[in-house]
Length: 391
Image (cartoon, rainbow, N blue to C red; front, side, top):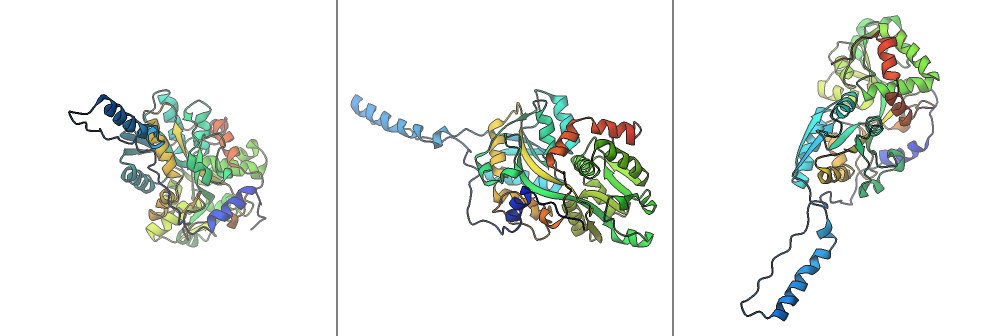
């Protein structure tokens, strides 16, 4: 299976992976509104001195910390990148918890960045929920992310934060291969155990993966290949060879797994937790495997959009998303990532990074740099021959 890469992140995630929940309860609605004060009733014969005394007493509560809490706006628009079911469940739970009328729009990482760039200083969204950290890291370079360090970020391992408030991690997941066992058996092919296995002629037109221009999953795979092969040029050379085996490039990072579950392809390159989800929901025998030479991973994030129309509600959402209760919602809709909060219950179906070989030289920062650089454009020209990105 190759050698495991021991990095500081693993130590942090080991604590997360063995967590079984928390007895401590947090209150994500602490910012829900200013304390209301009651008006003091005065009798007709109240003296001026008595009135002054009553007024003094009435003013005292306004100096309390609770009265200084920001008032939440009535609405919140969420840019959401995970699976649709998780987006819906998280949005509903936040609304029920806070009373804020929250809505979401699901976009892949590439789509989200393009949307933010198009909207500029007048964004449609207030907060970005889920998807690899490379998304807000890239958007922040153009001023589209508002840094925010939540008080609840103190509970999240530092390895799962940007450090400057650009984004804060809410989950972790490993990249892998998702194969249709019946499809491969009929074709006489074994599930891939390395990136070189995907180049086997038997896989020609039998693989699906996301496009570098639209997907954070694809950017994670690119960083994985750069780490393994030493340079962007070498990674692109591999992707050129792989192109003949690709049945379809998809817009979304999880779509290739659905194609494998439907028997359209034999294998796909996606995050392992998505493959587990599709197997559970479809009943199809899907084989999760990892490149023995080492794989990459994502840190799923939450962040605030710059110039948001509802900034206080956005902060409240970030605070809420970092609680164990919020993170445990994922497993209820078959999303089996490792939660970032050490006290959040870890789904038994989750795959910890400590259980898979990680690529030497891989980092989330490398994926961020590739996505922000010219790698997607080079992929379009050198691998796809100028073909349009999938819609």
